[in-house]
Length: 124
Image (cartoon, rainbow, N blue to C red):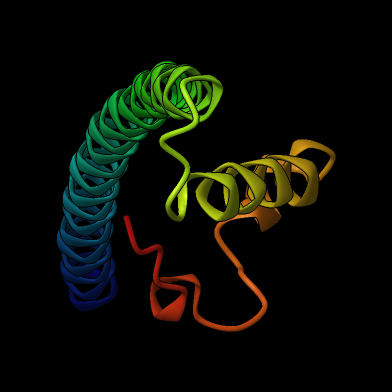
């Protein structure tokens, strides 16, 4: 009987060691997963901030381009009214054509141009 109690106590001690080791392993895994989750969420926040900055930059450059385009067109129209045409009328037509083509396109597709717009030369 003493042997069976001794064996039982050894078995209980071994079971306690295994359970403690298992619980410690579970805690370590939980900590690692929590650390990974925090890192991923921080990275997502950083990417959202960067994305918002890029969207703001695109929006402001779009507005700048619109202002420049209006100023250019006004200048060309003023030159055309003074009969200094040269290629001014073709430049005005190109600006009007570009404005009409892109005014109704969604902004996500505005950058996908059909053909290369840089190839179109305007001579002054």
